[in-house]
Image (cartoon, rainbow, N blue to C red; front, side, top):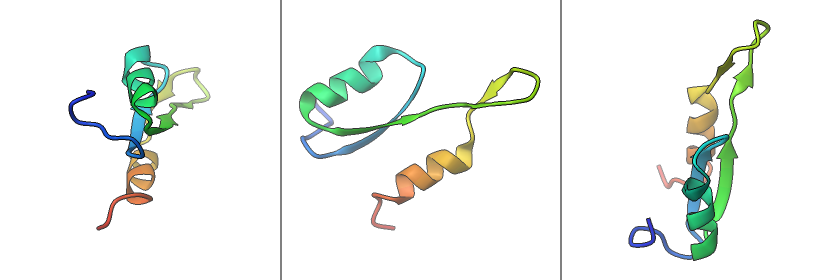
Length: 62
């Protein structure tokens, strides 16, 4: 990851997840946004793709 990231980059990482997914980015100086699952009434957790797209759209030029 360190070869691809630069200080100031914006990283969206699933959370909970492997700690290295967000900590390596933080150590490089990236801005990290955690993508957390939504909990359903049945107790199950799902990641909402629309939430991920909004997080990416906030920093992408297109």
